[in-house]
Image (cartoon, rainbow, N blue to C red):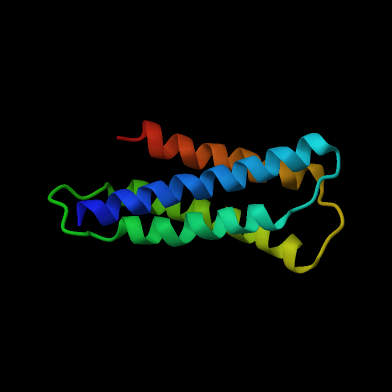
Length: 115
């Protein structure tokens, strides 16, 4: 089961990289919109995050409060990415876009710094 958990953690990090990298590329290109890479990253983050929250035979379980905070952040980011993508918006409000980037970084900070 340890191998499954490590593979899920790796996929979770790939999702983070896709989400943040896709967002930064769009932001620095000057044309701010939600692209497919960001949607894939947000989707991977939610799916692997739910799978990582499962017990998977571990002796020490993660803090339920931390899981709840990360889950809420991941769902919020997913919704913030999904809605403009489905509506095929040519541009997204700069504040909305910066909120996606900020919440993605906060979600990573919760994972790293909350013990």
